[in-house]
Amino acid sequence: MFDVITFGSATCDILTELPSGAKENGESRKICFALGEKIFLGEPRFFSGGGGTNTACSFANFGLKTAYWGKVGNDLFGEAVINDLKRFKVSDKLLIKDRSYPTALSIILSSEEQRDRVILVHRGACHFLTKPEILGNKITAAPFAKWFYIAPLYGQSTDVLRPVVELAKNSNAKVAMNPSGEQIEKGGADFEAAVALSDVLLMNMEEAKHFTKIDANDDIIIMKKARDFCPGIVVITKGKEGALIGSQQDIWQAEADRAEFKEATGAGDAFASGFVAGLFLQNKIDYGIILGMANSAGCVSRAGAKNGLLAKKDLNNLPQVAIKKI
Image (cartoon, rainbow, N blue to C red; front, top):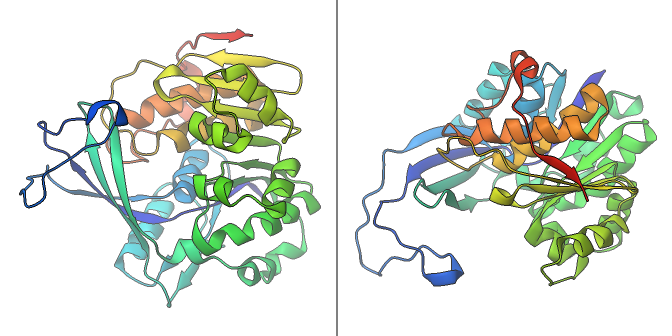
């Protein structure tokens, strides 16, 4: 039995730095260039990425027996993803090699000046996971995981959300889900049913506003409304401003760790997987918050979504996090 099985994207990431002269266009937070202009970027670097593999490697780094269930193409990028999973000791027993689609590709334009990035995505194999590929797997005949973590899903893969959640619940596993903006936009009965069955629901603030249909700047009202849909724990991340965490009884506010910043890709995956790992290890919300914040801070301190993740040895020396009950 695995401790955690993750679902979600598996990509090859090409990371490069935006030039220092790139400016934001007012309050819209858009990086703009003139048509016809030649832009010289920083040195390109290659990493594996995607929410499914990022979180799988994070869970495994904490010492949890982890598998990634998703797809890559039968190509060099797919082999790079598989090799990274092996490096982190993530099982590829459930990984599918697809001959119809290439491995998904992300081009990440990062700005250290503005502590953010733009991601250009070419959809690939991981975005075309199908119900038969889930329900037809012989391993589904018996309980085989304690937790299922469902990272953001896109494209055709959004259709597997409800079957995966029901599979988990039928095997008495707990479910954490971090839906994509595309899933929230699509909504529908299957999405709402999956949320209602989840033990942990994670979103950023913009996604939470869209999910709750509340466009006000009142974080507490948004959290209370989100809790109406999910009977478990709701986590709303706010970037540099930290996060809100709500059980059905209480709401906590946590400040972000002001760590050294290098590159933001994977920060959300690192926080989410750290939080869920904290629940797995100690079944305490405050410990999950501390572990999530520390993991996210470690992630942004190094380029690539996996290179700064905390390891099991770091659990004895976690930084202090300012947490207060509201």
